[in-house]
Image 1: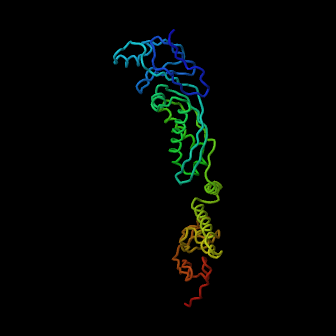
Image 2 (image 1 turned 180 degrees about the vertical axis):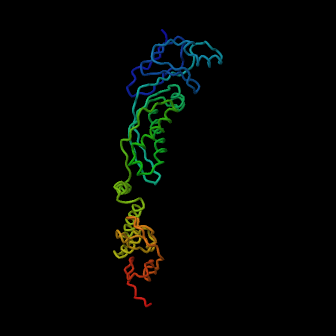
Image 3 (image 1 turned 90 degrees about the vertical axis):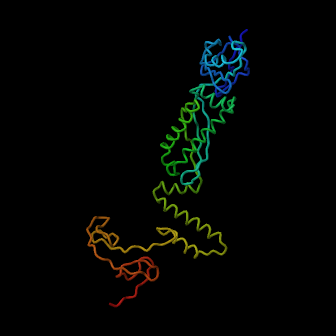
Length: 326
């Protein structure tokens, strides 16, 4: 009775199976079912590939393997040595989950599902199954999950947190295309890649809230976080009083951070009443032409702000100027 080589009762999620016997006889019957491929593997390289059908093994339908056997002593003897690796060509799915870091150093957690199938059985066996020595479905799944996670992390780390959350459709499409290229290099076709969950830490969720609602610019969000952290540190300090916090926080909340920059002198537009820089030639609000003239200023002795010479009070700290005699 001829030798029968067949993958018996594969499960719907099984990816690979290796025929347990390496001694193959000429004339053996190779049975390959629908959605399967059988790859002959020897000496670390994939040779002939068989699709669905019943095949009688001869030198005619094993041309690549026959070619290497001709270089060996004893060609034509039976049995000959080779591994037969069965590969499922069905679309299968897997789960992934990654922890990455964005360009603004924000932690990012993603999870979802990917769908793939074996497109090039010989390449897949060379690069993954035989090449990595992974002859079980569980081992191959673990490898592919790690392979996918690494590519997602590499690509998603090119974006800032706000972009990932506000342009998730665009971002996921770019990531999918990058992963697709990587899968093709190991003989797989990535049918779909789904982002089913994207999250970050509570601290960065709060930052996203202010940015996405348009209530603050990135620099303002950063100042708010600085204030929050400063207040927390003050609260930890023994004997810290409210007065100390009230001194620190207004400095941090200033438009330029901890160091205050004196405000430039301003004038009132005669047309719309807007407060505008005294050196403006036109009102930025209504376009009213303005008479440009030299502006005389003086420094506030209390806060150092530059104010109009005619000012009676400092607009920054409220200091009252003494009337100057001509």
